[in-house]
Amino acid sequence: MMEDSSCESFEPLDFPHVSTHGDEEPKSSESITPESPNFTIEPVSSPVPASVTRNFPQFPKVYSREKAIPEQKQEWKDVMREEMSALEKNKTWEIVERLKGKNIVDCKWIFTLKYKADGSLERCKARLVAKGYTQTYGVDYQETFVPAAKMNTRLTIEFEIKELGKLKYFLGIEVAYSTQGIFISQQKYVTDLLEETRKIGCKRVSTLMDPNHKLREAKEEPVVQKRMYQRLVGRLIYLDHTWPDIAYSVSVISQLMHDPREPHLQAAYRVLHYLKGNPRKGILFKKNNTLALKAYTDVDYAGFLVDRRSTTGYCTFLRDNLVTWRSKKQNVVARSPAESEFRAIAQGLCELLWLKIILYDLRIKWDGPMKLYCDNKSTINIAHNPIQHDRTKHIEIDKHFIKEKLDEGVVCMSYVPSEHQLADIITKGLNNSMFHDLVFKLGMEDIYSSV
Image (tube, rainbow, N blue to C red; front, top):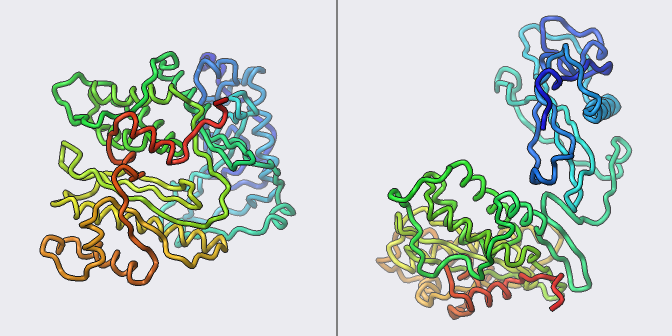
């Protein structure tokens, strides 16, 4: 825990900093100290549970200049000195006279802790950042720009760059390498989430959402803490980066964050119970020499009971490896299953075109047509048939967009039976056998399992 406020302050440090707020113009960088009242200190919250971080250095708070920081917090002063030295060395700023009538961009310190892949502390970090949001367009600046990146060799000459080697851990995502391919997972993130929610000892469940679930707004049910529910859903949304099988459940519970009730919280807890079943599970990107780009699109027609909007789902594969997926409620109410399917196909096609552009940027030549699979034969027939249908007039833009890409040979559409529709898992609740069959087909597994 933090000490009382009388101890939560920094003693003045004898090195420069960049804020030039105030009426007096600075004569040199030595006249600017980190304890200037123009600096604000903002701690960044730790993603590691309190049970793990209780012995880690605590974040500084707002300071009074009269009080000295305790010696046990000396590490924060050290990293501040390192940051200032680096800024000075890289000539981040220059001291100039303050022009009359011009505002000064303020600065603030950001503190955080950097962790190793196992959750242990690596080092303290302090960054001095400019409060750019205090500028006014037309007064403090006229245009915005992003400087172009330079080659690594040039950057190495100008700046201190650390070569970290192969990626193993980044923002909660763990990366492992084998002869089979590359495996990504979020085992530590799942474990921390279970500890934080006190679900580390919960019972395991094999499925996420009942096929006939009736999850909807429930005004008659007990209210749950809104902030807690939103935080939990937010953590689950981030977990969706390596767990595509939870995409549909997370999409449903995230639509109820404005007024969470007890059934909604229990649905979110069920996701945690499912995660407890195998927290080491992730996506394996297998080595494959066949360059194939394909997508599966599906719809749960009028599945959301509140407003009867449909749920769009698509998943795309490159070299038979899952690369992108999405489960999202459509913006408008569809009047027929074919209409909702057209909207889903259009979104899946846009995703394929985007991936094709990325391949082009990576200098990967792609000549053949992309494949798009749908389990609605009438939708496929309408897409290939240029004759106007009265019941499809209101979706002409999507229809002509799809037809154009079909005629150009950019994409080819094929029918896939519902039992082989991989996008089913991100549009609706499924029974146990079908659910786990699709999880396996998506490429999700536990490479650490002995079986």
